[in-house]
Length: 448
Ligand SMILES: [Zn+2]
Image 1 (cartoon, helix red, strand yellow):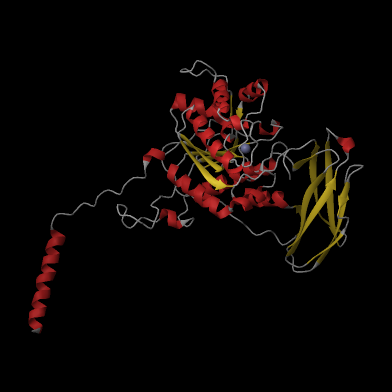
Image 2 (spheres, rainbow, N blue to C red; image 1 turned 90 degrees about the vertical axis):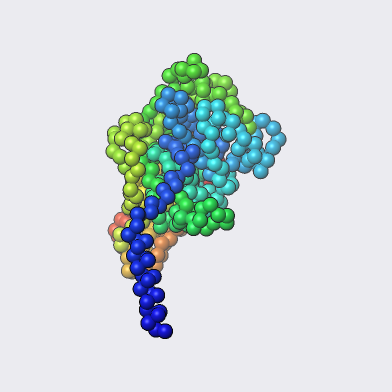
């Protein structure tokens, strides 16, 4: 009996060897990612109508260079005003999504995605990220980068500026920058890049996306003073004539804008001025070289890039420091972590306050030493300005920090001027740091 089993095994083994020796069997090709959604540029913006900021430039690219462009909106604009009708909230969001689709289609963009973030009017980026669910929103943006495989990402400047300074704009810029650095990392949202076990079957697990590294990221800003953008990125005039439409691209952008009826409470003169302004970019970073003010596609080829690891978070040095807190403190860490620290030098920290109204100024004292520290804080405010609370002495535990939430009341007499507010911290007779915030005393739109 035993011998029979051995003999059978030998026969089986020989037949296996025979299969191995017969002609190699070619595996079917691994399906390519769905090419219908590949783009040259992915715009990541906060609201339906933010896309108008670059519409004149994009319309020309699509028409003359046949570039493919798609847009991700991080909100559906449910909290905006409505100049077209009474609809608000979710109804307004439904209308604005449709406005965006019609507007984009007017210059050749057919793919747009609308995320579920609630339109959050304010100026503090962390507020938007909290309202949206930062992780959930980032999951979506990374997924859409992997689906659309953009060469270039265009988004809002992640910074606190004097201007519209919308926190949803900043939030879109933060998510786009994070996604730029994560989409090629298979450890980021790994379920997205897991191969489905049987793609032709139903109810699969594994999204089947591939990691993707975009090559460049550019920022646009809603800041009112644009002089700081000079030399920081390319600038495109909008007066070139569209060959098919026989009108300048500024006109094409104005027509695209006309689809956003709910958001259009501007005069014709304002619209003309707005659409005839050059489209200005700040180069965030390039993984393919090229000059800072060079063309957006300078250095970009169709060759895919490997994952480019950004610096990431690094612990702060063991020191006692005084800094601006809140969004300013966040951005200081964020820019460094994403290798865009040059944004810190675009301009000094600034804010705006309505004359006679109050301004929130967060400061933070960090004590990354091993000893408890006492810090004296001294404010230098313009005449007629006041601060609450008035405390000047702070105790900070070892490896702790103290967030100060200051309310500064401005003087109405300073209407229309810029003022400097500064604070100095001292400990044990030694200066530990000072911060200055430039403040534009002007009626402001959004809450801080
Ligand atoms: Zn917006």
